[in-house]
Image (cartoon, rainbow, N blue to C red; front, side, top):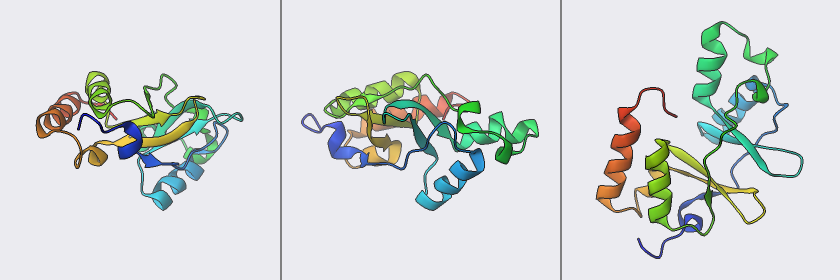
Length: 145
């Protein structure tokens, strides 16, 4: 695991969306690409947030609002935790555990979204103890994404 980098584990070039897209459009992207989190990028291709299926459900649908009437910027998470493309896998796992997140966007040297790493992506590469600790930490806290 010591020589493994984020680039070796990530799903490259994930589908991304713009802040102005409507939530129903993003939900269709999630269905089409079988994902629960979509990075949000600005016109310069820089990561400005993420939107998850949970964000849509908890912040909009559960409040009785119509997702067609709201944009990504209305419910996205803007305090995005990221890792760099050349970060070690140990660092990636530590970041995910520390922030209790199931997915983490991977950014390149320009701050553009180069990929995304989910817990499932780590199964082949991470040490069993580190991976089980990550799953435990994320699962202990209700309301994490």
